[in-house]
Structure formats: structure tokens, C-alpha cells
Amino acid sequence: MSQEVKRQDGNAVEWTVVPEALIVTIVSPEQTLFSGSVDSITVPGEGGRFEVLKGHAPIISSLTEGTVVCTGNEPFELAISGGFIEVAHNHVSLCVEEKV
Image (tube, rainbow, N blue to C red; front, side, top):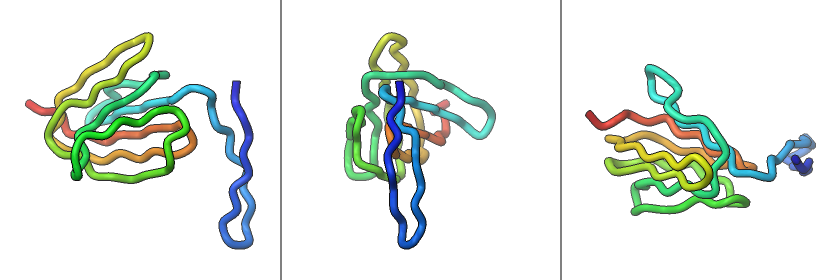
């Protein structure tokens, strides 16, 4: 189930569909590494590890070397050497370099 929310940027008004679950997509330059619904995701941010839950405030951050951990029905872990994360409206997108 989804919910529509109204965003206003200056004079423009935009309706955005916000999913009830936290939707995560993790990509590398080569491929999609993970895509699915999770309960939470913990990432190694520049200022330290942080966790994203449903309803998290919008954020864009760089990621450092460490482990990305997704919890929920399909747990997922990935060692990364760096990357970026964007969170908005229960959608989490990561572009990462896998640690070799």
C-alpha cells in the first residue's frame, strides 16, 4: 500500500507516492547488487555508521569503507570500499564500490 504526499518547491507542487515499506536499491558500476523491501539499512557514513528506518528524513551522504547491512525478510550484507547514499520518501538508493 502507498500513500500520496504533496511537496511544494517554490511555485511547483508535486505529488509523490511514498511506499509503506522501506525500498532499497544497491548498485555498483557493473550491476544491481540488491533490490528489495527491508526493515532497516545500516551504512558506514563519513561521520560514522548510521541506520535508516521507514520515514527517515531525506539525506544524501558519502559512504566510506565498511559493511552495508540490511535487515528484514531477506537479510543482506555487503562489504564496500566507498560510495553514496540517497534517502527520500522511503526509497533508499546506494551506488557503491564493492570491497575486493
